[in-house]
Image (cartoon, rainbow, N blue to C red; front, side, top):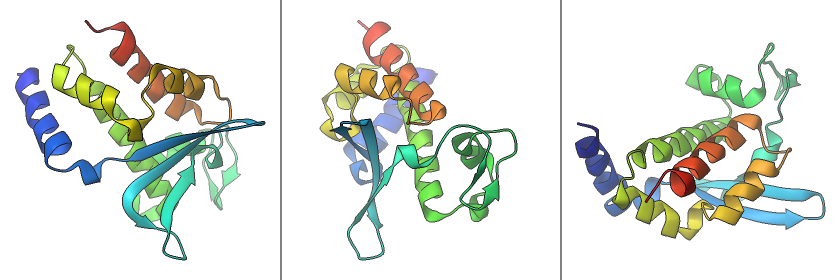
Length: 160
């Protein structure tokens, strides 16, 4: 049963392993909204927390990061590429996208434990205004905006 699995995953992640969850931050600039993503424990070249900008993975078929994505956008390619072929920042984006997908599945059926945790967690940018800002921002990859659209529907539209 789905509810049993959701409860088990919520307990494992939200109670016992919060340090596995990605963090987000929104920065508003004159050019638009920037979505910063961090996976706890990741460090940059100088040892500081590694934050990646979602906009650094542009939409559209193009040569990016020295690879040919064919007709697919970079974010879609990152999700399906062999893990060993990905650069560190690409792996982080993949983990983040997979986590947002998991979050969306955990709140299906109005799971109150997941809803409460996700809506009250300031490190996830899941407030309604934040979700709408991300969805409207064209510099954020379409795949990431699609995940946030699903979250907006499941967190704010299809719930009690």
